[in-house]
Amino acid sequence: MGTEIIFVRHGETAGNLDGRLHGRTDLPLTERGRLQAQRVAERLAGLTDIGALYSSPLQRARATAETIGRRLSLTPTLHDDLMELNFGDMEGHTLQELQQKHPDLYARLMDSRDLDAGFPNGETRREFHARVARALDALRELYAGSRLVIVSHLMVIGSGLAQLLTGDPNRWDEFLVANCSVTHLEIAPSGAVALHCWNDISHLDQTTEATGWTLPS
Image 1: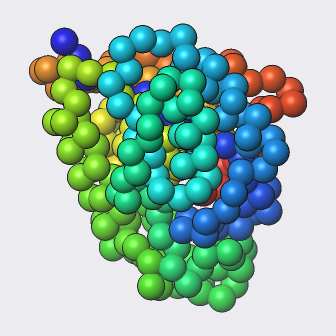
Image 2: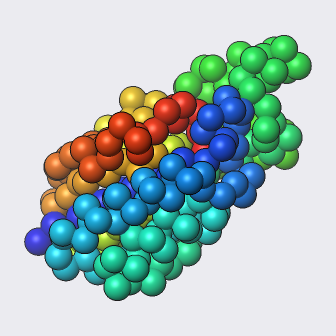
């Protein structure tokens, strides 16, 4: 029996709309974000045999997970390794500001193969991808053969999908996911991975579909 992981990105925050990098900045959900969380919770309520619900401890993910948990009768377990990339001193900056103030760093960060590029007082890519891998490896072992919901962030989900599906975490930006989207995959005992759906927002409508969601948060 395979292990199923259902990734849900948190609902919308003001940080998704202002074009700035928000990794560890602990932003709340917007009103639309709360509605998105309700919609994705309604969708997941149709699934059976969900063994556990995990979440990043940042409030945008935690609030989304708590809304889901009320529908599933599950209490979210908070996991620090599911937090978004730590942008360090660049928290709250735009990419344009980063390019203007730190052109050499910006050039390194734009090179997806530079694993040791990182943010001052934040994380490097290598540290970040290793953290995501550590979390997923531990949860896969703990819930082998079960169905698990993970509520997290853009880059965490992208990194996890890239590692599981391609073996290359630097391809994370090929797996961008919208706020309160559902991505469902199954890992066979052999290690083969089947992707059942990716970035599915069919449970949202024009009033709840996210905008400006492609920056990390």
